[in-house]
Image (cartoon, rainbow, N blue to C red; front, side):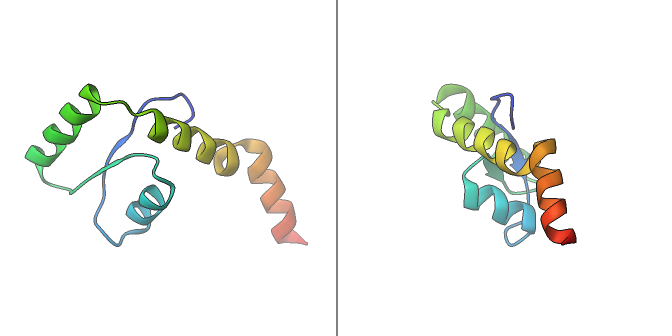
Length: 79
């Protein structure tokens, strides 16, 4: 997420992974066990501009996955 690549993610609709990716628009979601959908997503991703998804993924990583933010959140929850 943080390095700027586009994640193509297979996740079932309604799963927490699906919901988080969709809510933050930080990846391309594909139905699991559907090779044709995966190939289509890969093709569209390679041909299109993914500037918004890249930016959103980076922001998500900085906000929720950085070590500083993880420890800050941990401290808040421990108080």
